[in-house]
Image (tube, rainbow, N blue to C red; front, side, top):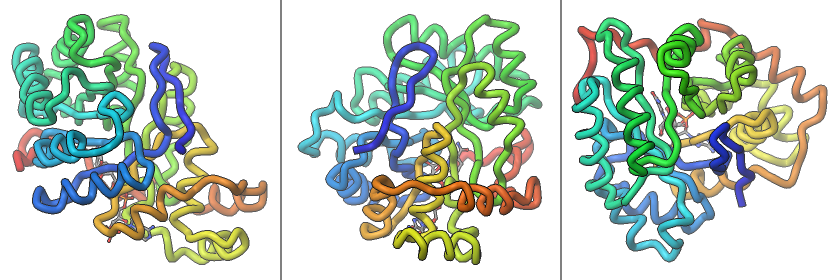
Amino acid sequence: MSKLAEFSDGQKIPQLGFGVAGILPEDTQAMVEGALGAGYLMIDNASIYKNEVEVGRALERSDVAAGDVFVTSKVWPLDYGFDNVIKACHKSLGDLRREAFDLYLLHWPVPSLGLYVESWKALIELQKQGLVKSIGVSNFYPEQLQKLIDETGVVPVINQIELHPYYQRRAEKKFHDEHNIVTQCWSPLGRATCLLDDALVGIAAKHDKTPAQIVLNWQIEQGNVVIPRSRNMGRMQQNFDVYGFELDDEDRRQIAALDKGLDGRLGEDFDLKELPND
Ligand SMILES: NC(=O)c1ccc[n+]([C@@H]2O[C@H](COP(=O)([O-])OP(=O)(O)OC[C@H]3O[C@@H](n4cnc5c(N)ncnc54)[C@H](OP(=O)(O)O)[C@@H]3O)[C@@H](O)[C@H]2O)c1
């Protein structure tokens, strides 16, 4: 059973969830049913993943009570603007067949659009209407978080950012901690790029675990929320089996030393011109 992190609004989120980006619609239902069966109680989705309908089907068919699964979705920047965000949320709720989201996020700030503050106000409205329980953002830098706070007085409960051993973002994590914003890590395994690293392989052998289990345990012990993705049932189950052991200070020192800063980064900021719509 996953441990929980607590938001500033009082809601709790499982620290370990299943991310469904890049899972083909035709494979999604089986993978999500498998994840729920393996014990995952949090699903990270987004309209741009194009598999909300299939996730909804898996949630409906599962033996796990609907209310026991924490469901996140995100609004894509092409749907930004107050009215569009409200519409997009209704569409996602319909596709996932949920009455409300546990968490709804702005997917990317895309500052060149000039719409992220207005879109944040739409999330505040959706929360007032009871259509989303908690509201947060993804891929926001501290200055953009500060702008939301300054202009609306409402602090996002979470910021979902790329974070893994090769890209550790300590200054941003510190900003989040100071503002009571939970750090959620996308590509928490660094899309497997770091899993063959000698340091992680050595730590894994010492604890009789896999490098992926070491990385997830390391993220969770820092209070982060992680959403590893796997299209393989065995690896998906392995990624949930990350409790029952503790890293020591030498392990932590070695993992801290893996940080490559921006050189370790896998993604890039979307600009208006290159914003994909599928
Ligand atoms: N907010 C955003 O902008 C954003 C951006 C990207 C991702 N995300 C979220 O974050 C989730 C995860 O990110 P991600 O898929 O980019 O990266 P990830 O979870 O770090 O890595 C996934 C990759 O690692 C492999 N893998 C998974 N478990 C493994 C294990 N135990 N051992 C070895 N390899 C393993 C997977 O291959 P197999 O499938 O073959 O196992 C896949 O290639 C997404 O699904 C999505 O929910 C959000």
